[in-house]
Image (cartoon, rainbow, N blue to C red):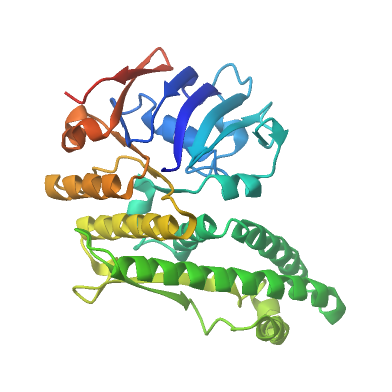
Length: 370
């Protein structure tokens, strides 16, 4: 049985004062005019995974205004024969809390329970903007395979911030750097290995699938030089780079300098040089490959969040996407401005219409997209 969210309750989250959705494991199609609050529903669902959600917003930014009471999200998650009740909330803009089956839990525990991946419009420029966004994209995919990847990323970034502070202050005493570089080497090596493992899983999933979407040749490259292959090599590289890093005022070697490089396989053209439609199709292909690989690894595809997914997809590709989602048996949450964008789904999906009046969003169940 697929991983599915079967009940969602939203309280004082963004434009939604109160909303409750009852669901089964079919794809979820949400439609309504721009600004009505469709994406806010998907963002609420994204908060049942580790991190700051698909908009990378702070807890304070998510609270409904002008009340600013804080927000609370509750969900029932079903996977195989197990049912779990999950709550996540924030009060007064403070960091969010998580409770699983009535017990306080970490976000890493949440990631082990609920696998989730998403594709949002801001990612449409992924291949033509800076490497930061591509690293975040890859790290989200990596976390879907290995939730502990989040801990390695946080540990590495914390140690690097401290090392960068020493570099900016022109501290030259080697003793100040040793412990930090050891921590960076340990976490950084784990990051690199996990990323490479995730890319290998994506490549295998692409090769084994018959799909209407183009495949991509994927590589992890460095913006400068090469990534040291072992923990010892990375620690030595950091030590050797201190003089250069002091001049730059920041760390110039490590996994934070990695970049995801993609090539449109059929054409041999870098993704950055493809058309807008081709770039979107490549992203959809990666998300579907991620879902197929996870289905093989954990026994079910992840929950998919596909915001405004119809943008840049013609009717043929749209129908192909819906067919692949249905074949995966994935609960995909999709948004669009009108019901006509989901006609090809028919009875394979469940439908909700979002409207807005006086700054308050309302969600209604719809029997069909007609």
